[in-house]
Image (cartoon, rainbow, N blue to C red; front, top):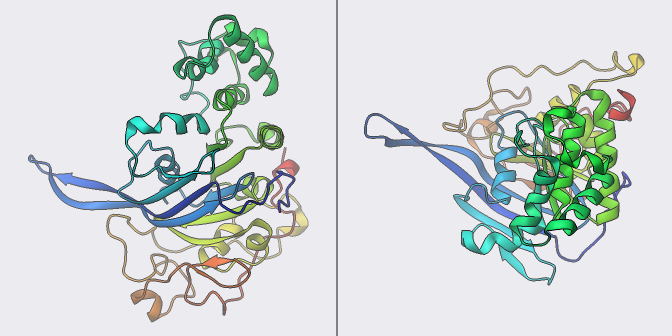
Length: 357
């Protein structure tokens, strides 16, 4: 199933299914903090992830992709919707509705790699404390056994075990992110949510971390939800891609299909912005510059939220909300004219991050 060597497998039931997920934040103003409205950060998102697969969740800053990830981890309690996770025993559990106290077993199976390798590590803790903390909290290891486990994890992510007595300030950004990955792997998770895991790193280090994530996926049979805004990284790592705009999914497809034949004008604009390392490719098609401002999630426009910036918009787009539907071969798009528009895709191989070190 996987086209990028990530080792995805095919299962009857998805590992994770998100149904009509909504996360609305209240807007309160005045001395008495009266409720005056809602910010619809996530507004009706539905997708699934198969075991062993990597799903990329992409979009501009503020589109709701990180909020979606945090809802899955139950950092936020969703306003509505379902987050159905299938455990090792095959039983499906709605993480959105269960009590906080019942989440503990699932926090072992769903872990997160954070965006900033500097602020996500406690500067007062050694690597032994940072990587070993989940093992202590869940009472899995202590003493000598804990040290041996941390040493093994550090070796597996490319760090020397003798570094475990050092503090985060002694390491570079790439090395710190390896520490964050080791911490996420400590409890042997099944699903790893990587929230912009390489965006804060130097370009020369990104390919190393991406290759490490692929190696770990094959070795530990991991499933990834990879949140990013860099489409070159997503093409390199992900099996499928889900594109978000103002709290909603506008397109979901196999990676190769989406990059070659996008069905939503917003995806077309994103792909046109992917850097082209080959000078011969830069003259083929100009970048699409979107006009206007991103819609306000607290006061979205009627109809399609993208119509204020879309060069293909018609009167129907201004009044009727498009449904996310299958436009052929499992390719989903939320555009009234998805079957009619002939949109420009990315140049083949033009966004491979391994060519931009």
